[in-house]
Length: 147
Image (cartoon, rainbow, N blue to C red; front, side):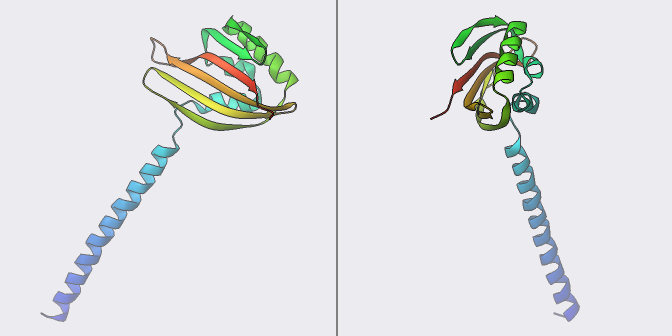
């Protein structure tokens, strides 16, 4: 075997190895992208972080079960927006951390911790798929989390 033939064999082996390395890197990149995808719209979390009841209400169903500390009931979208606006005015958000989200085809949920001017609160919400294929909040809960 000549030196030229040895050189070609080495280059071909390195080339195929580089091809496999490239496939692995691209696969890992794609996997990391998929794992970072949120199940729920980022705008929903942004609205909570900002304490923006109007923006948050865009994700509400026409009627929503609302449980905020000691106030519980089923409200229209507009009523729920006003109740949340009062809550955010009294408890100005400083930080919101998404703790967990999950769901299946027909329903999804999110749980997070809101640090506000008056303390810490646990926020949970449950979304259901509508006939139009969009997910809307049917239940929204804010609980005192000051232990």
